[in-house]
Length: 119
View 1 (tube, rainbow, N blue to C red):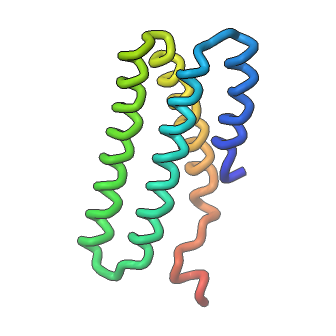
View 2 (cartoon, rainbow, N blue to C red):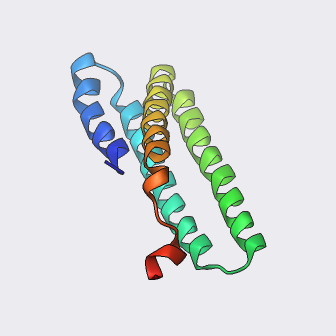
């Protein structure tokens, strides 16, 4: 259930095909979502490994800002190439973010902190 956003991303492909929406929009949205997810995983790993609270705050903050810009610039760039593709990429990313955010809020009470796992 934790990766439901990836399931929705896979289910969106036939929707794009059947609806005749721009595949460039799907590709851009998918690449942007997967790239920001990889950056999120890498930076979260670095933040958990750090003992310095300032380093953790810097990594997490920089990651959030950078990932937002990555997705926004990808959508903007595709929109400059083809208006409909930019719109469809934006809608796809908004749907994926909504699913990801909702699932992470539902699962948050059940997550263990790294220090609790060792005990």
